[in-house]
Length: 362
Image 1 (spheres, rainbow, N blue to C red):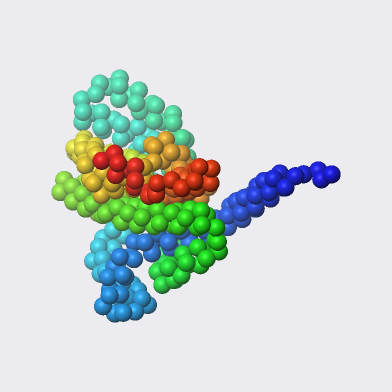
Image 2: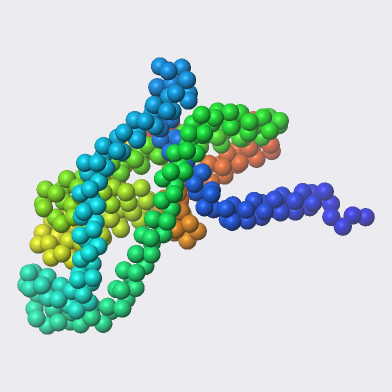
């Protein structure tokens, strides 16, 4: 008599495969992240490549033309704007020790307190508090520096991602057909086709929407900060636009950074900057983002926050960038799996698509 029946054996084998695959993905997460960013970049430029392909009649030629246009645009941008951003960043970096000394000694608190009419007792209490917690402030600055250094260490992705994306752009259809060819069961094939179709739609919409939101934030931050003559306006606007790619946490960090720099440099109109940041956040979250992003994610805020925190723990800054699309992809797989399981139990159901529920609600 066998100790394990066939069903138990299948369950154990399936569990073992999942454990092995999970272990491999965890061990190779750096390489996996490079491929994920390449996929996102491919989704970003695919519409332009497909449009040019109609003229050139060659997929490879269309990819080369779009890459050349992107490289030309970046070269022009960094030629005219890059030196100024670099100069502002250098000035801010050089002034950081002095700024930190002003905070830890309480001098900055005294200046802001006098400007806003605080009593001497209140100013002294605040100064004593910052002086007592100067060590904590130093640790916070050091952690921020480590995060920035960690992101800088991944600069090799700037070169690798476009190269990998070119292969995805050229052979994506062949990859999809090859994956489908491995599945011979009709329900399983429908399940895989549904997952691929839904992910294509979700990722394409998400990547283009995030780029649009980041560009709008960059223009808004840089324009307003330059208009009110805030210090380091172009650099802070650029950082704010980049941080817009990080869901939930990014805009908050950008606001804290902009207001923090304004306070540290004794900028008198920092309250106006704070009010602008609050107003822009409301406009971005409740007016602009719903129209650009639509219902492509359909993630609960708790799921989004969990994804951001987990992504940061697993892969640092890059993991935070990838957290939301990964969570949305897992949701797609889960919902498609439920449809597949229902079909196996009760027979064919009505066809399901990623935006079915959204359409019905509207």
